Length: 127
Image (cartoon, rainbow, N blue to C red; front, side, top):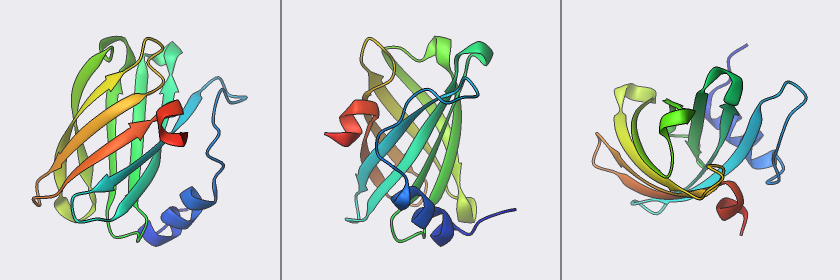
């Protein structure tokens, strides 16, 4: 079942900011940030250490921008860059700097539509 971006935004807004290890062995961490046009954005990182894979999902709180990207966990510390895709054909790149755990940090994103954004993830997102 697929959700619309506004529906996903509502689901992410309703989610608890505290995140951690899940029963399926995945680790989840929150994302919070602001786009250059003033919109707030939030999302989640899902980390599968066994598969060496991380995935992030970000949505603007108004639901009009939804983006998703993947990265290799083993190549992500302490600074890494990766590309992502968004609805409407928008693409982008993000540069992230994580702490020693790889589960918290800061990121800057640049979008193909001229927007940019500053984000925090993990414990940094809930401070």
